[in-house]
Image (cartoon, rainbow, N blue to C red; front, side, top):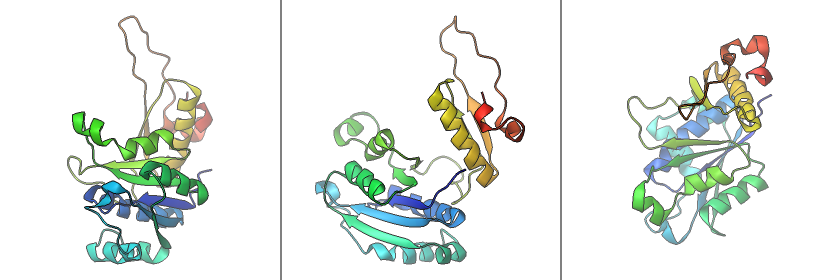
Length: 212
């Protein structure tokens, strides 16, 4: 059973970071979860100084990004830390507070700029012990609706990790009445595809543990 009691959004007051706030809060409202906003200061923080984190609620209310009902339903706790690297501090805080989901915005850096500056988002995702929701840039077309998941893509290689990912995806799909697509990529001219897997839409018949 999917249980999300505590959601964390790392916030550095950049547009990429601000975009994820309404999504995290809307999810917290739907899951009846506690909502943490964490600001980590470091030497690269000069353009975005630490600000009044409790004002996050007022900012969301002013922009109309989430409903008044969601704002009233969610307890928001703002925290500022300056005791280490950004990614490391995010993980330490998540461990201390027993966070169930980390939601973060990424800036989509590529090429030399990414090599020089690194990617906090990528580091968080690679080292995370818990699920991470990443929202990248402005995207193309209509922006996603906060708190809504309509379609979930799960790349699978038929390993145990892939099975676990499919099970988790099935649980999220039940909560949001979403569609799950399983994608297996066959590489090499001699490789033959595996037998077709049951669709997640048939999950009520086969159970998420028997998706493939």
